[in-house]
Length: 400
Image (spheres, rainbow, N blue to C red):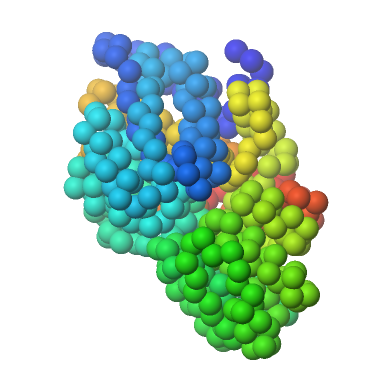
């Protein structure tokens, strides 16, 4: 086994130990796991890294025997970032004989499909979609929807608290009209209200808009000294470019979509200095992250377009396997897998964090506020906004 595999999140050594433990004879057919996300279309920039994170973990798991000798087999469905397509692909997964599914990047697509997984009693682990309703729409004890992504309800207060510390309290919000924008606007306004603030300007816009000059002028006239943007596509770049063209030198902040290529490459120099919440920054700040980045580069021979998407999907896959290994008879009914995910007994030393019972019957969100760091666009890449965060990241944070 290559040396980097032994470092891989502390996961493989434990999985190998479990694999060789004596158990009742199992059939050799593959164990099927579903993956759904936007692998073509505008959202593929973060859908493909999500898929690659799953593939990397599956290759490592299969290299040490899979589930008790049964290799994992992925059933991959492309939702194209489209709500109705996502619903259809989700129904296909529900009928594909998978034991669980990993997926969704777009909040609107996820929300359209949640009832498919709930009605089928098919556990779903969401590694990308950040919209708060994804895990709030269904009461936690009943829900088959798990998540390993910082929901907007913790990203927004994190960013707003940083703005207040910097003295940027006159906030203009630019939010798209998708499900992500709807939910994100509610969360940002709530985070501002908790600080005794209200936005000085709010703009809503459709996806595909390329010119927001009039809205930016209105925000400037309202006295805004920071722009909080809530969208996942090139519209973030349209905001940055429009601000630059107006000669309006105010910062742009937001959630994790400001780390996407659509923004960094699309806005170019206008993206410099933008700040965003992150769970993972692609720097080899500790052994686990260095091993992950090396393994990704070797397998895919390319940089990670959206590192958070890949890292969270990778950890999601290992957490699923940790749960499945508690099911010793190989009988993977939906309720059984759900209970296993809610009661993972072993600590998982992941890329994003160290996870100790990440989910429970009453909690379906694995990411906690202490895991967040502030990222910054610098020289066309994402780095730590604060040197102390870089030092703190030498030790992976534990969920709490």
